[in-house]
Each structure stands twice: as structure tokens, then as C-alpha cells.
Image (tube, rainbow, N blue to C red; front, side, top):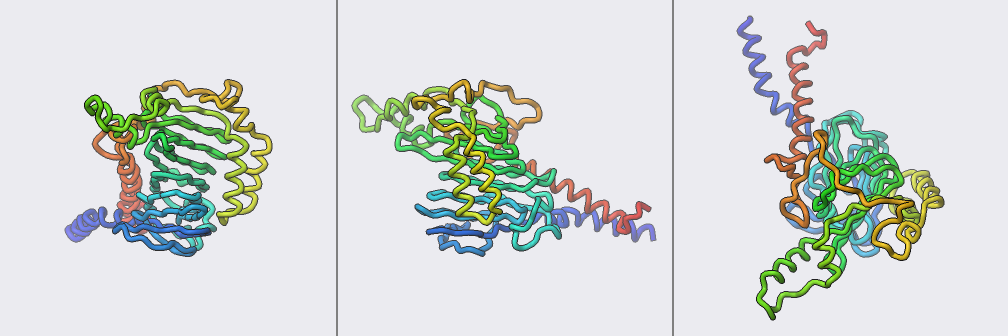
Length: 360
């Protein structure tokens, strides 16, 4: 009999990786409101129109056309609105199955189970509403210029490259809290409080490539010379500006959520009320100044990376990798998945060793 239970225990232990792997499954994304022309691109690069009610999983990309928007509602209760001319990739979305995951996902009031979400925005602007996350959950948004860690909040993130080759990343925290990192700056993670915004101008990969070609070209060659203003930005240290969200930006966020999302009306109404008391863009940046007026904002100075902050590698990119490398041979995403899987492993092991739950 003892031999039988010993054998049973060995079989259960051998099955733990399978059980835990099954426990952490791909989450689902449900398409809410759609306006204009929206395309989904699958893992095989096949493109097709995206319609309201469609469901997809990690690995897909969504692209909005001019004057088009798309609302994406996640099975952890979060939602994102893609504004016109935006490209988004759902790189990772996994969660532990739960009875709290109900359809339609808009009805989910908080993250029902541990989940890991990573989206990338190569270009464009998204407005997000992330419900209170599970203590083990992470929600990360990446752009070519940096990354943003989200905790239950309303936010917007924009990254666009101008004709001069300079990329501008803007992160707004309407409510809740977010933490942002600009890869090529000397500033560590910056906490963005409710009602605040950060922005940085970062040379794009294309501009860096042009500079490299120009520097290696012989005198009188055909390599394109960058504009002096773009060259000045490319050579200067990257600054992280911190200041209140301008009234114009808040009003725009409110209008987009009212027209392009299925969120309760009070969300956009509250944001619009914030706009009524917020300073204008002209007040924050008088006479088109490059930096905010001291009465409103600041240039965030260099800050050391503490033990509880994950250092971000600056290899590749205009300032960083497009992967989630943390410089330690693994990835931050892998660390998050391992944390959740380990927790599931312990739970499964306890149930295998004590199926009655009595502790005997």
C-alpha cells in the first residue's frame, strides 16, 4: 500500500508541469465598437477586416485606418481604444482560468485571476482603461521609445515619428498610476501620478540609420544629411518632461471614449470635468517652449535604478530592444510568467498532496 501511494505521488509530481501549463492559458480579446476601416493581421501576416464581436488571441496585430477607431476588450476586464492610424500588436496575453471570466468581458469589474499582458504600439495612440489588477498580474505597453507599466487606471500612450525622423512618446495618467521608462534616457522608471503626463523626443531607428550612413559616407557622397534640428535632438541627451495633462488632451480623451468605447458615460464625463480645470497647453509651454514652465512641470533628472526597479537594457533600438530583455539573459515577461506558474505549481501540488483539503 505504501508503495502504491509512493508511485501515485511520483506520477502526480511528474504531471505538475502539464497541469500548471494548462492552468496558464491564452486570454481572449473581444472587439467592441468599430468605426471606419480596421484590419486584423494574424501570425501568418494574413489581413482581413475586423468586425464588432470578433474574438482573437495573442500574436495578432490590429491596425486602424484614417478616421477609424477600434475598441478591444480583454478577458481580464481591461479595454483599449485604438485611435486613427494606429498599429497595435498583442504580444502576450495569458491568464489563469477563473469562473470570474464572463462574456461579455465588459461586465468584468476587476481582473478575475493572475494574468500577463504585453501589447506593443509601433505607431499611433491608444487610450486604456485597466480594471484593478490581480496582485500577481502585469500589464505592459511598449513603444519603440520605451515601456509603460500599468496598474488599475485610465491612461493614454502615443508614439509617432515626425517627418524629421524624431519620435515623440507621450504617456498620460488620467487616474490610477503608471510607471514609464524611456529607453535612451539616463532616467530610471518615472512614476506618473493622476492628472500628469510625460513626454520625450527620441531619434527614430530610421534617423539613426541615416546618421550612420551619413557618417560613413565619403565627402560629396549621396547619403542624405539630416535636418540640423533633427541632428541636434539626436545628439542631445534624451529628456523626460513631466507636467499636467493639458486641458486639450483631456477633452480629446473624453470625446474619444464617449464616441468610440462602451465604457459607462460617467467615465468620459468625469474626464471632461477634469479638462475644465486643467491648464492649457499654451500655459504649460509658453511661447512654444521646449520645456514646461517651472510653475507647472519639470525635466526629470537622472535617477538611480533601485533594487525594486528592473534595469532596462539599451541594446538595439533608438534606445532599446523591441523584446522585453532585462539584460540578464531572460526577459521581464518570462519572469512574470514564471512567478505566476510557480504560484500555480504550489497550488496544484497542495491539491495533489491533500485532495480533501483537510490538512491530514
